[in-house]
Image (cartoon, rainbow, N blue to C red; front, side):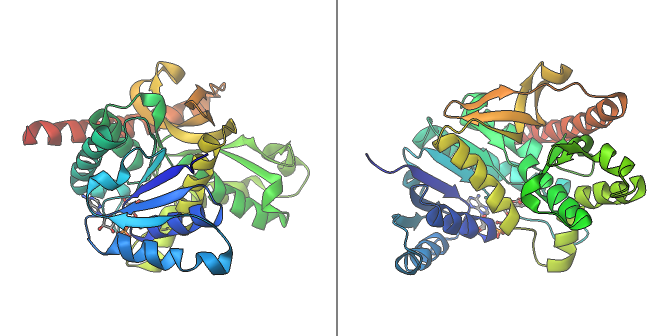
Length: 320
Ligand code: APR
């Protein structure tokens, strides 16, 4: 049986980390693409030269012509620009929406059967543009945000409780931005919801509020430390988990930016919700009951994503 083909569109910080992780996990053969000719070829060769030491078999190649992504099973998109200190994800919209249009055309031409995971920010709007421009079915185009946001939440909670990160599940809804909605009552330590842990004296509501805020600001915290770019290790890990769920038909329940067509009362918008990811792509959108506060937070988040999508539509109309 031939190996799966994984195409990485964008070979910068996240793209390079994705290639290394996909190699280490033997997810398939990997092809890297970037407009900066030489970079994808160089990174692919460098990682291939690590394979004898690490003990993985994967063909690694790179190029700057879209034909290299031909017939890919999975495409992970990080092409575009990352933010710098003082910038919000939304400030990237002008450049990155144009990049998504190009990438979407490339996918339409060369890999219309792929499962596409978008990481480029502002995520929820960029994945919308990518789906539109690629013309792929909405269940085959998804945005990576919730796995990362909930991983950050889980990590902070593990530190707070001094327990393993593995025993923490966390739940984050809404857009990948300041308006995201980390859900306290659906997040647990070994099945014990966080509000119960407050009652048990493991933490206080005030501490939880701080952790929720730190989760919302998780991306900015890294940008402010790095100063020259944004997070890349954890975003890459998160996207690889989604690719793995698709390629192995794991039917993982993962929070992703998924296309809503009426679920949660929202239409024609990508926004973060729990999904089931398997061989069919986004196989199901899990519709949980939101309480009044969560609903208000989710609606506000959807409004801000909607505004960004509108900006993309306006930019596209100007170009046309
Ligand atoms: N087509 C293909 N690649 C492009 C294009 C394009 N039109 N425009 C830029 N690129 C490439 C750049 O050459 C660069 O190698 O995208 C890569 C982006 O890499 P980095 O600048 O290192 O950014 P990274 O940290 O990987 O983040 C990429 O993901 O999390 C988001 O906000 C982040 O939008 C950013 C994206």
